[in-house]
Length: 268
Image (tube, rainbow, N blue to C red; front, top):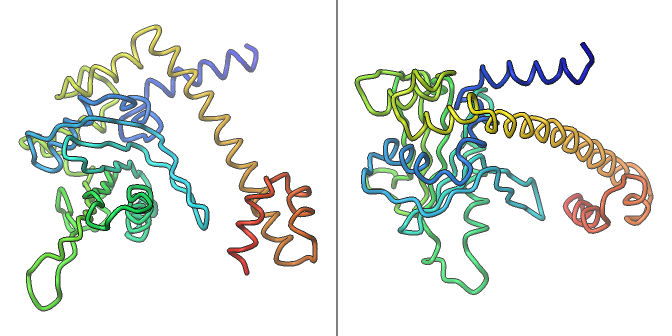
């Protein structure tokens, strides 16, 4: 068996074992999938009338002065509220400061020059975590700001929510949802809105072929990100430890000069 055939068989096995709790698979299944995204948000937020109007997976949000973020799922509803849904299998990936950072980048992208601050829409950063990261046994943790010394809400429109993937009590809608996120087989899932896309990418010939291509693209993306990270670190070290000009650092690191300029300003 040659390396290409072996790699293909490994990809097929990987697809069979995929769950929606695996962010790479979840992003593919939810791409442009308004129905599934609507189901997830309705259950998590307990808003059965919520209407999703747009869904984008793997949305990159640039930050010229700091770290970029890539949203697993970016959604907008009929009231112009914005949702960032993130899958986190590792506890460290659900750090509270990551939620804060995601929320801040959302705000920076949603308010356009000249707009009033009151025009900033409500935002929801939702982490669906494989484990109970707070360890309190709750199925869901809703974080909103309050005014100290009272129970009054500080209504700034920012909401952070953690959904406990271990809470699979199948007597509740949320428990059934988390059960479905942990399933490897569409036949074992409760919600057809989720099972339909899972079944397509695992069982349909065209869907499996498409998923194999997506896995290959993921591998290439990881390689590109690794290359970029090495170049970025090299440029940082050169700017900190040498007398090279910005142009020389850009040439040596193979980074665009605009990025090296921004990096140099951030280090100054």
